[in-house]
Amino acid sequence: MPTKRVLRERKNDEVTPAIDRLRSYITGTGCKAGERLPAERLLAADLGMSRGTLRQALALAESTGEIWRHVGKGTFIGTSAPANGDELASQLARLSSPIEVIEVRALIEPRLAALAALRGTPQGFSALTTIANKGLAAINPSTSARLGNEFHRAIALMAGNQLLLGLFDAVFKVRDLNTWGKLKPVTSSAKDLKQLWEHHAEIANAITNRDVREAEALMRQHIDQLQNAISGQDALLAVQRSPKSWLSGL
Image (cartoon, rainbow, N blue to C red):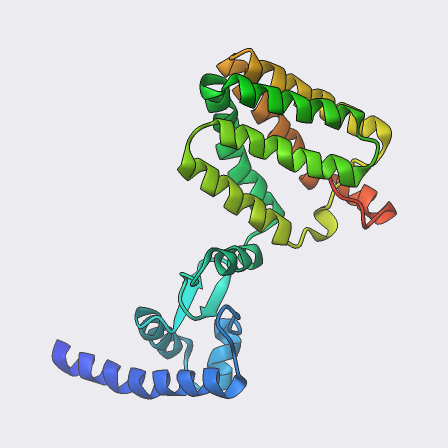
């Protein structure tokens, strides 16, 4: 029976040409950082090796920072830590989905609303109320969307937590870069905009009244409604009627 040392040497003998072949493939196909490699089954066939040998080569390439892997997403060229925030946002936008963006928002924005109610200043409350009033008077989706972004960021600013603010900005940047596709819901009618901003106004009122629990609960309800709109069949039907429409300030 072969010893552990012999088995290890045999394994290394297999991996060395495999990793060389993998590197040649990456170079020869001109793959760039952030691009996804083919599925293991296809890549193993292209490289003429078993999937087990390929996985060993991929593990070695990952350990040296030549590739990185995400369970359920695939294998990508380069490291998993881009050089700057814009590159990171672009990479995350390619890997994430609209539902994932909403899931993260559901985690952080209710807490941001609670902290805003706790730590907000009169000046901050006044600014938030002004945005809400402008939103109530908005008559088109583009204006509503711009004001909606201002509304949510004003709350994040008032929360007084720089780390959460940075996370909020990163999530919204990923949201703007994300491909929403058929999951894109519609709130473009005057009635839709009115209902949206009435809810925003309720959140603003709870925050300015320093009602921490109510602010958190209303924001959670708000994000839940967005998630339902994205995942519901009504949104899919609506987008077929108007594929260029988008949520106005949610």
